[in-house]
Amino acid sequence: MRVLVDKVAIVTGASSGIGHATSMLFAKEGAKIVVAARRKAALDALVEESARAGGCAVALAGDVKDENFARALVEEAVGRFGGLDVAFNNAGTLGEMGATPGVSLAGWVNTIETNLTSAFLGAKYQIPAMLRRGGGSLIFTSTFVGYTAGMPGVAAYAASKAGLIGLTQALAVEYGPQGIRVNAILPGGTDTPMGREMSATPEALAFVKGLHALKRIATPAEQAKSVLYLASDASSFTTGTALLVDGGVSVNRT
Image (cartoon, rainbow, N blue to C red; front, top):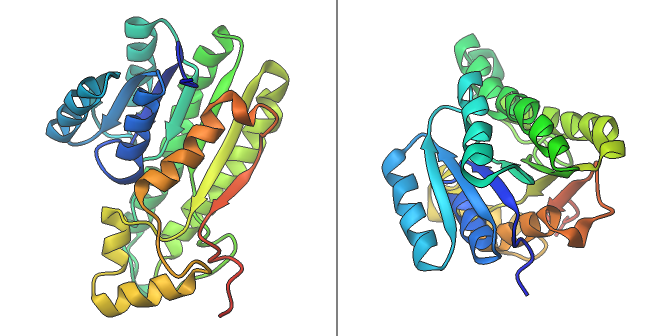
């Protein structure tokens, strides 16, 4: 039984990694999806791939830091499919890395805007559309970095992703009485372009795998299953949660 039949979803950062895998899983589970990212060609390929799998998706390319784009995504969902039930605000960046005193203000601002402000803008327009449907599920992609563990050289990334957890909790309390659930997933190491950027050599990858209790990293499809849980009625009593999907990296000391 498909668990998202008659549901309408938005997925940002959909052109690769967890966003791509989640878009495909949502489509297979019956959702109608608006997929968003900067790269139009990659989005168009995703729409075609979704159609071959029996799904229904439309693409809208743009910058998640742009408030007009956040509005347009919701307008597309409502205009094309009649409403909005699920939003996976997943787009993000590692941003400018390195010792904190060397990080430029522009680099800091870009990371905060891409990872945190974009989530606020998404929610700003997604929530009213969900309220018109009587409720919905908002999901953000945070990380264990800055939550259960600190790592050097990624201050802006950690701060922006930790901010998403605060946003998750605030919105969960603010809109829970009106039927909107708000949660965040906190992935561990995952085989995505961003993950490969942090593990650029075989030695670095082996080190990252060893940090996890499972001694491996996740596939994007594994992360997508946890997003599906939060999107579906299987998580009907789950809100305000920072859901660790991290292979035990937060507890491992071996």
